[in-house]
Length: 338
Image (cartoon, rainbow, N blue to C red; front, side, top):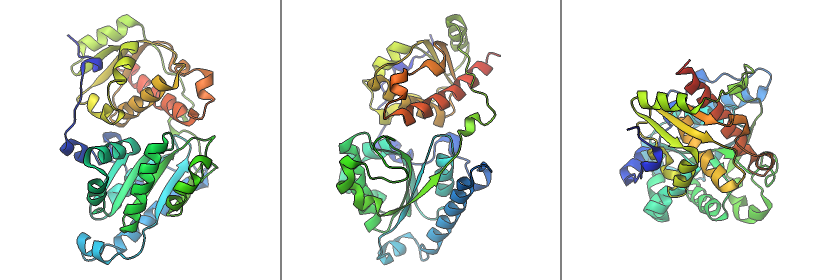
């Protein structure tokens, strides 16, 4: 019988949480040399050059060993904030910096760090991360006031300890000004954090669609089911059943949810019209994409996954990124059956 994601109850250990603080498989080999800037958008080459210079600066600041550096760093560290649309290579650049940086460094998504703080407690998490040369935060979010303030405090404390923090943005476009943090609701609370960063704006088109291919074929139920049953390591779920299951699993565990999955199969994909289901699906798609898991799906075309109202909302940046990533995974899945 084919495994189902909806039957899984992931409960990752603390060692697993800490062990996962590295770039995911898709970006395990990301390097500056493999980042291909779009010549039509000079800001991409500029960002690549700035990352290289920042990494070199980290190297100059770490002479004498990590702990010696930790004792001697009296100045507050400044970080980088990579701001731009989806598909311009922010995550690739962030992972490249991780691989370039000297000493101990950590890499995770915003939600992974908030979960780590919840598991360890704020002070213990700060002490643990404070031993790092570099903390990389992918998909920085301003969706939840509590989580946002928790992370801004964490960043301030790490910066005060001399830890460099580099983040990519995943902001609410309606709430934020272009290229800055200053959401009106959080301005006073997060301004001190924003002052610790140099904002690097990266313009461009979604690299996953530079070839103009936006087709993501939908399969029929029989094709999806047959491939799942014939494929070792595959999972098979009804779409609505999986959505219900995601309400019972913390988003920080979605990575563990898809451990050892060779390909994910979904039956009856439909259009989503509420933010709750849609935002959880966004996180799952991100983890599937990070781990390069092909998706085979029946139901509506990927382009119809979110209603026009959702795509016009403050979360549209997330939804469009999700559509881009999922269409890539669905094309990968369809190629498995020709």
